[in-house]
Image (tube, rainbow over all chains, first blue to last red):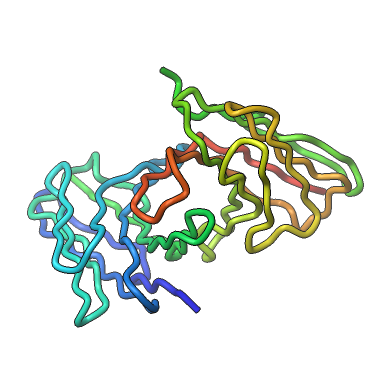
Amino acid sequence: GNSVTQMEGPVTLSEEAFLTINCTYTATGYPSLFWYVQYPGEGLQLLLKATKADDKGSNKGFEATYRKETTSFHLEKGSVQVSDSAVYFCALSYSGGYQKVTFGTGTKLQVIP
Amino acid sequence: NAGVTQTPKFQVLKTGQSMTLQCAQDMNHNSMYWYRQDPGMGLRLIYYSASEGTTDKGEVPNGYNVSRLNKREFSLRLESAAPSQTSVYFCASSEAPISTDTQYFGPGTRLTVL
């Protein structure tokens, strides 16, 4: 079956540090890939997505590239801020009568001043 | 434009009690979903409605029922709550049931079953 594996957290960084959160997936065919972010006490919201191999999704300084050869979709940001503290979920999605989404377990990021 | 709204935000039930979680979206989306979020397990799909008038089981449907009341509203019912249903419940919607669509989430309902 489909699965998503994320690096375990929590990840603690100082402000302005470089961020990488690893995400690898197992799937047949060609899923779409997403990063969602969840701020404390809120629901998930889309951070970025990529719908085909070699696509790069980007938003708010975050980037991730859909790598089919390594089945990866790692999230990066060059300089994190305290306001980036949240839980980040990697997810893959298929169509099949409905949108079948498989979520990773989430990686908590804490950025300290 | 409120997006996806959920009520209540918090609820405490005793084992065996019933309750309905309400969800509404104002984005004219066709598809709606109910997930539960448990520590260390990500989000798991309980039920979905690909379009108005249809509902179907997801990954963990046991102990739950749903109603797609109209295009805007999708409710989740617990008929006889159990401690294993203690979780955070999220409703989500998307424009179409296709892989590339973004899902929009409500703020969640935190449910505790004693």
